[in-house]
Image 1: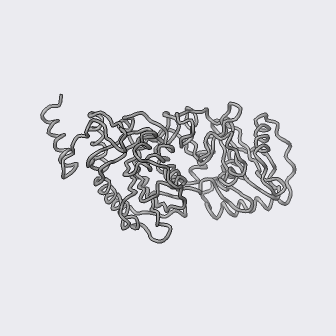
Image 2 (image 1 turned 135 degrees about the vertical axis):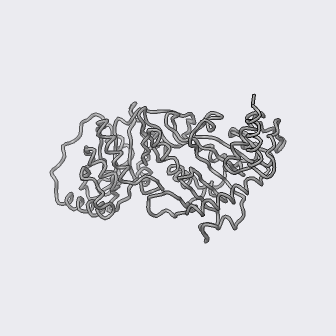
Image 3 (image 1 turned 90 degrees about the horizontal axis):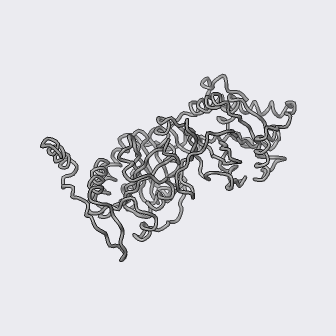
Length: 435
């Protein structure tokens, strides 16, 4: 039972949440398209309304909470055309090439978006998680004006129990404002690239805003979620890496490679997830985004680490073993046939590349994890998936071929590596890192 002071505090909180009083969610069923969409009980809906109000959104009429895929589709959700190239602005990113958004700009945009969502008669709220293990994940709450957006996010996020968000200390919030006015959609930029909307993320606020059709760009969305959840996963003892996890012969193998190389090798059968993003924690490893299995899963800590480069000159051997310092060096370089395309440069991140490489170095050294370099090219052409798998079998058997003596091509390649990494990191490159 609430005492008089507690009741007064609750009443005062209700008054401040909105100029219009928050009314309790109507317990019953909402009829849409002549089908019944189940809603939650009154106790849950009242608490949910308060939780949403804490994110700046006042429930005007109805909320549909944690609907299943079939329920979303009955309510009008449909798979929309996949988009790419939606602009993403990030506050708190340290990777160059990603547009910024100031604290003031994000705050103003958030105010406009929450006002818009508060005017919508039917809101959709969906909870999920980034990270396939409850041992080390980041909880996510979606507040949307569009069931189709929730349907897409349903396929990206891992399932999480009802009310788990309320028990989480730092959940991420995604605001979807698909029907917001064009003036707001153009607030961070103009031109053809903004025609379908944009996304804005504030890592400090643990918040992501999707305007217009931005929710339909799954690649951008996953990149933004990777950046936003990295601090949470790190705080919970995880090491978030921009790599892939392979399940191979009962072993978990951590793989670093450019996206184009992954696609060319056609490794879908051995990849735990086709999406980049792995978290290594003291209790095991997991992938960031949902797979077809849908149920969260924790894998063993990586028994091997593989870094893939591609070199048409054959200066790099097909397969070679690396020390922790060499692994960190090649991770930072991301050599790809004359170009340097590091795995960490694809998406925004709050983690400095040197700090990330140091984490990899320490992990490999402490766990004494065997690490290898595979050259994805042979005689100027990409090797196929079967050959790549054969090379993994060779390294798992610890039957590596003898390394040939270094020739002039290796010396030239070393010079390219040194020139790139020195220009990028200068004196901050640790002395333990080497070719």
